[in-house]
Amino acid sequence: GDGSVIVERYVQQPRHVEVQLIGDRHGRVEHLGTRECSVQRRYQKLFEEAPAPNLSDTTRNGLHEAAVRLGTTVGYDSAGTVEFVVDGTTGEFFFLEMNTRLQVEHPVTEAITGLDLVELMIAVASGEPLPDDLNDVTFTGHACEARIAAEDASQGFMPSIGLIDILEVPSNVRWDSGVVAGSTITPHFDSMIAKLIVASHDRPSALAAMRSALDELLIAGVSTTAGFHRWLLDREELIDATVTTRLLDAIEMPQPPALETELAAALWREHRQRESTSVWTDIGSLPMTPHRHQRSIGLQSADGEIHEITDTSNVQGGRGLRSLVDGSRQRVAINVAGYTQAFTVVPRTERWAADPSGRSSGGDALVSPFPAVVAEVRVSSGDELKGGDVAIVIEAMKMLHSVTASGAATVSEVLVAVGDQVAGGQELIRLTSDTE
Image (cartoon, rainbow, N blue to C red; front, side, top):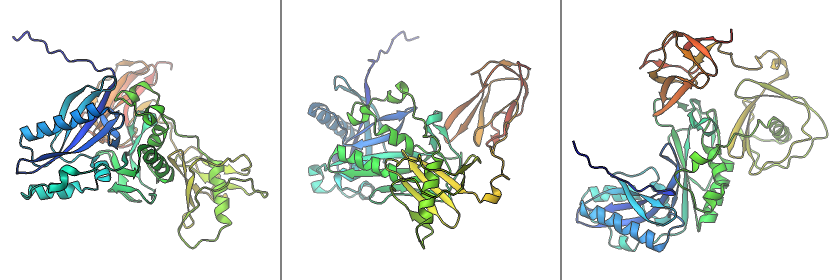
């Protein structure tokens, strides 16, 4: 055998920086600048910027030159991306890979160059040479992209399945998406449902524009990463451009704000005092002042719990609050810190008829938290489990999720096999609690 050992340098502060290339069939390859892609979960990008901030001229020029040299050497004739690991301490960089396609994050490059990369790809694929002025392209301003995925960051980026009940996108942004209100998110495809792109004259103003856009975005029905992104934009590491690919491994994920039922009730009261002919009314940032009169308002949240509100005197105005009220369906949606919370106004006669929890206990069983495919079964009947033991691994949206025991128990019956399609809430394994 070969006794050789390959040793790689360990980079303690790794950044993920890439260079956009475009080449034609006439031997010409040009770079279109850098992109910062260091905010990642499970090595998948979540937030991108162009140009990559906090790089020395030496590092930036070196990245450009290395990428063009690679593309020229292989005779590359399309749009492609050369990806590098950059040492956040020394500025040294190391080749990672080349993606011979148009990347998800290409809109941020389009925003700072004014170019249409899809149009350029089609042109060079048709044999046309690159435009003469492409080597003089200027990079204007700064752009950011937030990947909006149907995932719950507070639960380890667990996939979220369901019907998009409400979707309202702010103006003056680029929104690349294939979903609308009424779309169903299934476990059969990637979890990314949209890309939110903003651009401005410099990085601080671009980050501010992204904060404003996330404060105005309303998505209800499934959990998304919009609230995570809003939290991220206030992190010192992002503001100072010192993010590394290990950021999310070293910090605790944000928790969604508590249900602001008093706030929703106050918004509903404000709406009732206004006259509107439209189905959806944009209330905007309302001053939250106590109402002198009191009325009982019933609000039902997504989990089925009903809240009866009779006093809103303690309601405080929210930063970047945006809300919509659907007068025909008696729906209230609010954005609090980037998280959309939706409520249904419940008539008084129905408030006490509904199940206050909306959920079943599930008994002594492990259940699937969402529709998925069984990828691995790690236990058999009679096996003893302790809290945290992984019993089954399921797959949805190209991600694996471990179903674990909450405490000491014995497996009494395994109800599924590898390859089975399971529904959300379906029992996977029956248990006998060791405390019985």
